[in-house]
Image 1: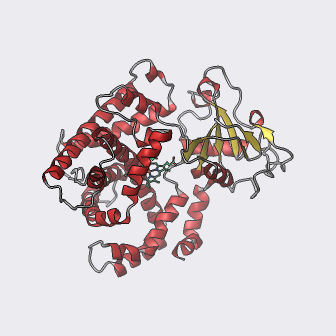
Image 2: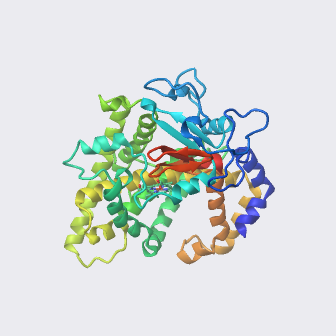
Image 3: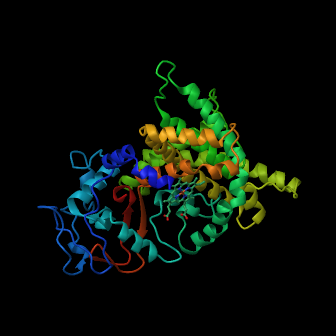
Length: 434
Ligand code: HEM
């Protein structure tokens, strides 16, 4: 109800209109009777479907050049050079329609999807071991260090190995008791973050110049606490250089830059250590040091006190005894790198949408003051914050934190009227479709 009211809110609607692209040009359709867009969007949009076309007929940028495919679009002087990915994808959608074929390195076809019905087909037809692009550069780094890693980790494992890790880790993460156990600890992270925000304001304007950096520190502290049952200290306003916390902040910054550069750049790291790859090496080794030290401490404590009945995620994983120490470390590193950017960006989008919708802000304030007689956060109080929950969901809808999810098809599929063969890389672009 609260979410619907928020959707009806004229300011929210206005923001939505400015943030969102026009509605998908494809009408709701069944798998076989879909509309097929023209090669270029001329004279008012797509023609009705006539027959299922082949992947080679799917519209997209042209020409495809040997070795680099159509990635020339991102080169200096070309259309998408230095443009953010959202804008690039929105432009592709407007130019070519709901399914777009590009060709990346070695001319490998990659399909960009923008129609939620296609997303549904892709996710419904994936097997119990979904196949997705892994970060080859991370796997390369870890496989070359067998003394530290006996697995590429949950986020980069495939098939049986992924399935096993997932079945061990996910139930621990999603156990309601584990989540409830974290509430008071997260509350102390939130208190420190509020204090840091207060201190970070410009005293004259009360504006925080760079909330993104503070949000990364908050997310790092929160995810570290969640994964390792311990505080790191990166919300300390007087953070010391060379402390464990500042090393971790540095590693997050390097990781962010390295992921971006290695993901979108040419894979030269396969032949020599590029600058971006060196950033990855530094970030991974800093994370490894911090994580392994902490895990070792907890293992020692548990050895001394086997009756310890604390509920934390790390403790539960150690007690389950299904992961080697190396797998524990790599799993925690993956939780840290999977959690930091997502939580920080989700938070930033949420406060942006609340800040730009004053009436939503008022309602939220009213809910918070009525439920929270004092500042203590409890599970019972969280359950009553229904408008806040609706705001979080609405912010996810307006600005999806993860812009797209990738799958490699395991069977032939008809997507937006084109036959896409098994083995093709498809990207479901939520942010353009939402
Ligand atoms: C706003 C918060 C978050 C969002 C929107 C989000 C979203 C996602 C998405 C879309 C995926 C890819 C799923 C797929 O390919 O099917 C993913 C994977 C993953 N996320 Fe998150 N996530 C969030 C928070 C977190 C947090 C807090 C952690 C860790 C504490 C985390 C750890 C991971 C890991 C380890 C994976 C890889 C899982 C696998 O490959 O099986 N995420 N997340």
